[in-house]
Image (cartoon, rainbow, N blue to C red; front, top):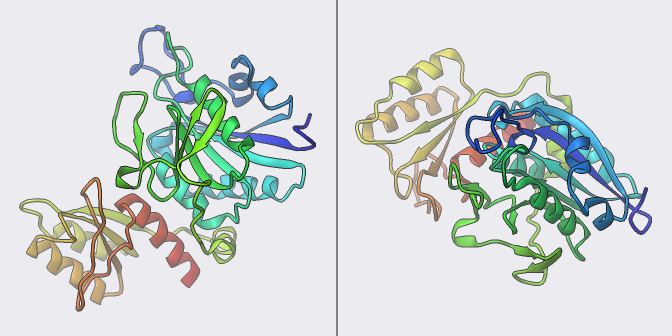
Length: 319
C-alpha cells in the first residue's frame, strides 16, 4: 500500500476528532478519544483515494489532549522518528486533541529532524456530530503531506496550515479555532491543493539531535510550571513551588514582560536558589522585547506554554 512508492503513516492519539456523544447535535457534551484511528480513516470518503491507498494507521495513545503527558510525547516522538527514517514513508499525520496541540507541535519540532512533513490535525466537533470537522481536516492533512516541498512540523485545521512555532488555539468552540497571530498562516488547503503563503513552509532550525537523545535517556522529566502575572499577584505560589523543588518557572507576564513587584521579588528569590525562570507574555500577539540588564531572561518569542516545553528540554539537556 504505497503512494508513488511511499506510505503515509497516521498516528492516532485520541482527542475530540475521535470523540463520541450520545446525541448527534451535542458538540460539547461528548467524550473524547473513543474511536480508533483506523476506524476514523475508514469513515472518510475519498481519503484512501487521495493517498493512493498508502495509508498506514497506528494507535499511539487514546486520550483527551487536556491530559497530555510527557511520556506520551516521548512515545509519539519515537514513533515519528521511526517512521520518518523509513525511506518508504512520505510523511506522518497525527490526530490530536485541540487543547494541547500547540504544545505537542512545538515539542516535536524541537526533537525531530523532520525533513519530511509531520502534520498534526484535530477537530472541534466529535465524530458523532451532525457536521463533524474531523473528516475534512484529515483530508487536508494528507493533502499537506503530499504537497511538493512540504516538510517540518505543521498543524492543519479548518483549511489553514500553521507552523509549529506560532500556532495557538484561540477559541474554545468554533471550528476555526487556531491562529498563528500576527505571523499568519503558512498556507491554505483548497479543494485538496495546498497554496503556500510564500514558496513553501518555513522550517525553523532546532536542536533535534541533542533534544531527542535527552528525551530518550530521561529517567525523569523536569518539573516546570507556568505562573501568571495579574493585578494583585503575590509571590506565595512561587515560594511554595520553590520549597517543593520546582526546577523551572515560566511567567506569563503582562505587557512587555512586566511583573507585579511582589511576584517579581519571589521569582528573583527562586532564581537565586537555582530555579530557572523565563519570561513570556500573556498578550495574544507580539513577544517580550528584552532590555539590557533584565534580571529575568525572555522566552525568545515563545508563548508561555511553548516556553515551558523549551525549558523542559533545556533542563533535560543539562542533566
